[in-house]
Image 1 (spheres, rainbow, N blue to C red):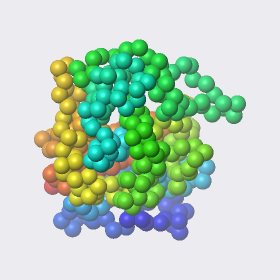
Image 2 (cartoon, rainbow, N blue to C red):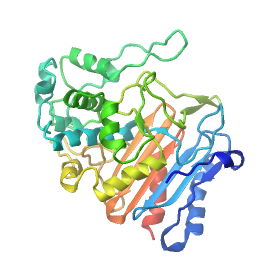
Image 3 (cartoon, rainbow, N blue to C red):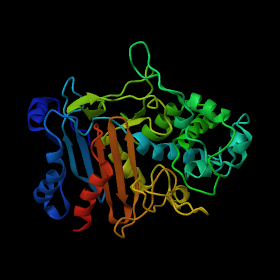
Length: 376
């Protein structure tokens, strides 16, 4: 599903949208549905603003793919299906999948304690298992709370913390936030540690493992875990925020270099391939996915969605239904980016929304789209 748009770049910039060929809505009503979907997104983005990429998959077919706005304010490249966005926490499902592959290989167990993998981890690591890291019940301290004041390089860029430095901060802590397994709390620290576990057990850098075991087999050739100075993001979208009435590039923060919790860049094209692998169970089989799709239970009660409502969580996926429809979903938020993927497996529906601007609710927009298709 790669659709180059270089020849139509000028026209796309003037119009503020890029339509991706080959999309057809259910029942042959593509024009009508396209107009309804376009009415959701077109008013949000002008032609020369940071924008949005939207993908709708129904029964394995892309029925709507469209880009709105531009990937950056330097070249004004129009957003299209190949534009790579920082996924932020939507990355967690890939980190979880990497761990699940190692479990399937027999090299790791869900109930292996953290302290057995990293013997130098503090005593509190003995009660933290791989499973508790995956389902966000580890109780690990938030590494952002352990970091010192933000610093900048001589050139003015933020000094960024790396995964190994997160590990050192956690090792220096002397306790957890709560007894592991007793409560659910969203944890970026846990997913950074999971990325480090993948490195330790596989003997390969995390990004290389992702590419060799997930991205390359699924032909997600342009998806990567970005590491400055080591690799480059093709067709990269840069993050933006509106300040004092004007757009500013806000692409990197002190926490933008960690990988396991949010460092992956991907596009609509490649996320369609990822969705296909989930739908057809080609990378991870149904038995492999079963523990990932089992909602965690804790004595303190259920997880909370971003809005504070009761939710459910598995391995890198929220699992609570929406309007009675079974759903697996996740959102991502980082400086300058908002992302979301909502999958309704029983309905054969997936909606992906990627934005390189911080003023939009990608998850709410994805659900607006889902509502149109689920109502049919």
